[in-house]
Amino acid sequence: MKEKMLLSFELFPPKTDKGMENLPGTIEHLCEYKPEYTSCTYGAGGTNVGKNMDVCKMIQAAGTIPVTHFTCIGNTADNS
Image (cartoon, rainbow, N blue to C red):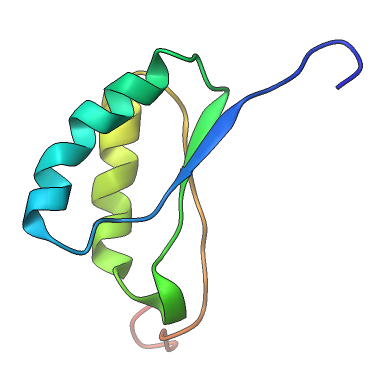
């Protein structure tokens, strides 16, 4: 950090279909700032697990590195 300041963004998967439709444009706008990566986390209590991977694919398609937060909340050995 003494040599270079890094920038990253954190996103939460939108709760609505409209939010998911708007997200690629938002991600592209954020990429104009050249973040080192953009992370995506689950909603509170592990909600929106399925949308997490969709958002990470959008981040990658926009040209930056996706980083996902992994949580065990709401998961079992059977569905992990």
